[in-house]
Length: 290
Image (tube, rainbow, N blue to C red):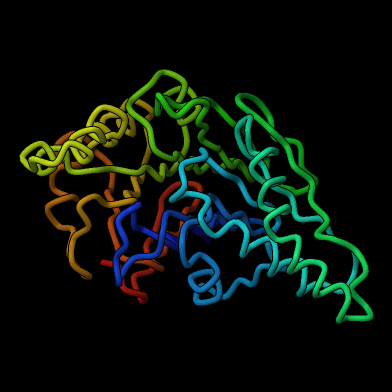
């Protein structure tokens, strides 16, 4: 019986893609729903995965690059207008997230005022609980234990990864990063690691400076696999594909990672789902995955 369900809500990148929403991952355990990052189209993918904004236990942001927070405003608004008892939306992220959310609320000012004026039972602005973390336990009321650790995505700093522990099973979700000791330590002994990756072997041959600039602060499939191998991970789940492969593809990504990792490598399209159990993992590929 699975303890955790991982759903790749958005496997895209800053480059708009008709087949892939922006970076976002859903981690579920103990009846709790954790959204990690909020890229473009996240609410559409959440609904396709059977989760509404008002069912989120918390939103966790790995870093403040635009592609990872593009639709955070939509998550905030949708949660606010779809609840009928005062229920705060818990948002966790690296230092700076409080300021970013503050500016989002400011930008939503007209919309908030319109809705309060129009709906008699809507009297307050969005209720938010914001926690800034770089390392250590994440304070929240859920049953799943959450721990944060720094990652290395410089000059984007700070950036963080999150570990979810429940009933002796652990899942780690890393945003954009190169290999680093803190991620190794956070991942040690976990069953699954969700890791972004870019194909450095392809990008290195594209003569566009802004693409070349991505090479020094992202991991390749091989590097993500090496991180998973060092940590003793059972299942590596790759996401945030650059350049993205066509729907149903990705075998070459899996092959590259498998050269450096003795466990199972998962790649897939949006809504690809992986079930994680205590002693082994299983994959549900009914929705676009392989």
